[in-house]
Length: 414
Image (cartoon, rainbow, N blue to C red):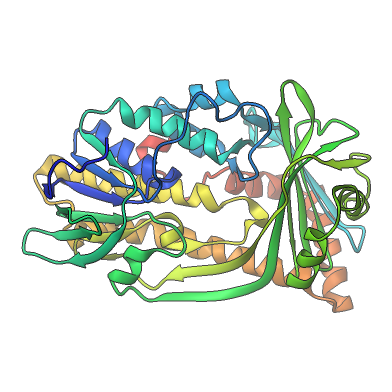
């Protein structure tokens, strides 16, 4: 629906941003019977009949088993898996400038798969199908936000077309450059990682074998994430994090030249590489909001934090934000409390900030360690990778962390 019928609207929760994280929160709240308004800058929802068909979309996510459980409980995962999702049962990580290497397998973690590579549009289309079936969730597209006000009844969002939404709780799920976060005057710590991600889809000479692979090069990590298209397991989604100058050079190459560069950088692990998708690049900036909550307002997903993609944890952190915030809000709603109460929102912030901070710190440590050219540190990282590969208990702990089994999980993810 367009939502142009009335100018002044009230709801229990207004979610600004209808991407994967915002849609997940709206679905969780809608299933609990709360009235939710999703305000999305996009002009319209995705066409669920066309996403996940034919050529793969450039943007993909590595969905952990914990996130899969969440999407399963929402009734979304069966549709996603039936449309297009590639499981990976193994991971291989090696140092391109040394001999260190570590391999992981799902059997060592006691799971069927370490995760699934899924196009972002497929996940979002599945979530939008769920939202359309929830009577208490209203979606409003083509929204342009102009102001944030604080009346006695909660928070009011003023839109460019004259509409106003008032809710006890407003949630910023509008991405890394969150306008709502800025309107709420929440400060942000931001640091340029010095990397630019080059993203595309390739077809390799050999099958990926359901293994996600990543090599650490002197300029940054290069990941080959497995994709299976129309039963063909020779496809991969590429994320090459490198210097701005190198990213510019790579994007200026012909498809044949870029394929050859990828093959060489990847040690020809999967044989010859052919670029079959559009090539995109975007700067990698690590961000962390100084506060996740203020009275009547909460940040989730990229509006609260962005992390280097080398571990594929970005969207999973955001989905956990949505699950924890929904759990706290629904519990408060059942007690008759207002969802925007700072005491309720602070519980969400306490539960999520530590995990997100630890992941941001870990990714920064990896980026620094594998970006150094100091001989002693290069030797240490090679010995470290090889040592981890030989220590099964340590590998098991690391894999449990990687699949999302960290800390106190919300009930929707257990």
